[in-house]
Image (cartoon, rainbow, N blue to C red; front, top):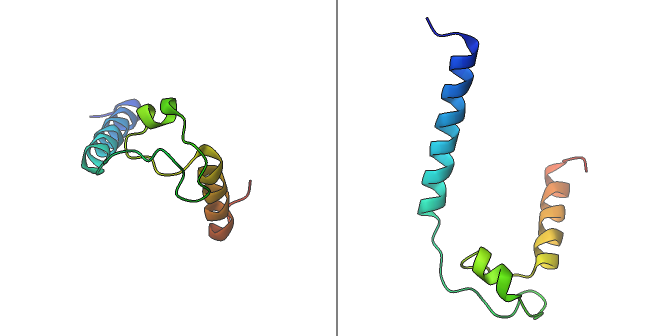
Length: 75
C-alpha cells in the first residue's frame, strides 16, 4: 500500500513529465533582434536563453502583469 509520500512523489514525477512534454512540443523559431512591441534591442543573452523570443524583458513583464490583473490575481 502506498503511503502519502509515495503518492506525492508520483504526482511530482507526473507533473515533471507533463512539463517536459509541453516544453518539447513548444515550437521555437529564430529569436527576434528587436522587441516586436517597443522596438528595443533584445540582448543576446536573452535570445540565447529563450529560443524564439520576440519581446524584451520589460514588455514581457508588462504583459504578465496585465494578464494577472485580468485574471483577478493578487500581486
